[in-house]
Image (cartoon, rainbow, N blue to C red; front, side, top):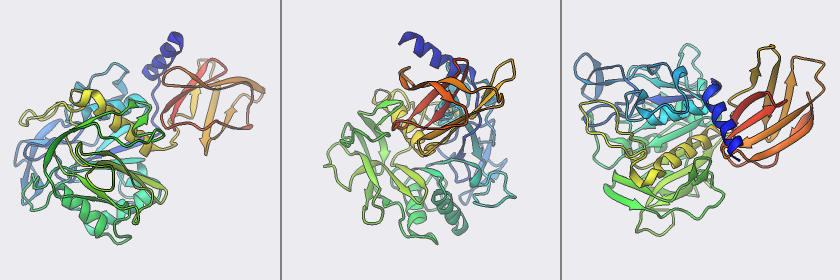
Length: 401
């Protein structure tokens, strides 16, 4: 077991893949007042006039598209202080999985299917919006709906009632409810609505769902969460039969109310909803703000577990790596779809090879000592998480199921 674990950690440290792009939003006033819900900002020069960000009128964080230092420098031991933002630990952890992270800046456009927009949502697998403080426009709501319908993953994070940080008269619970109830495609398509509440809570009231990969995913089993100034949610299985609450208030029965964390499927995509911005806060960011480390310090590290498990669930079957090569320039390609895979090689003389898949604990999930290049094979049912594959005992890659 020790050797297998060493092998996996070495892979995660030395291999870099850019197949899955994750977009963090900074266009909806995520940084005014005592908020810093971004992964990185090199400048603090935004002010907010009538709720909108205005350049060079204040000292709030102004997140740029690409975080710096460059994410190519991240290794398995990189700390959350690598970038300067309250969500930096989240971003760093995603890069360690092989993802590429970007930010939609304050003046970025939320579109879907607009080839003229380099940050069009169609270019990303997951869109993370933490405590928006500017309402989505009609066209932006349509873009978000199309993004999810067509296979995207949307991570929605709200905060407590009366948390209007930029002074435009609307806060994150109302903004999310407006998006879900007043879009041009479907009324409340996810079966989720945010309640206008404000409370603190430490809860171990998690759903008894042993096969739920958000509660029991590759980052571990979630046993508790801690909330500071949170809202709650109500879910409706009539509006969406797949909506699933997984964390509840400590004093609540497990039903459709007093929900703190939920997920749902819609079209070909998925959504996750969290009722408080405190859990992803890593304590770093704007020096003018009072930030707290809820990522690791609160709830005994469970916040990192549930947020990363949920992000992996949103990524869903996205192959993070398809090509690997060694110094002799031989290349293999690994393709996975619907639990079936094919391995190709540029060396046509290669007929059979050794193939293995490991989970994050170093356990062998699949092994074929005589795999034929170009032939389709079926995998056993895999739980959601990160996996390592090894071809011919030399060539290695990874993917997220």
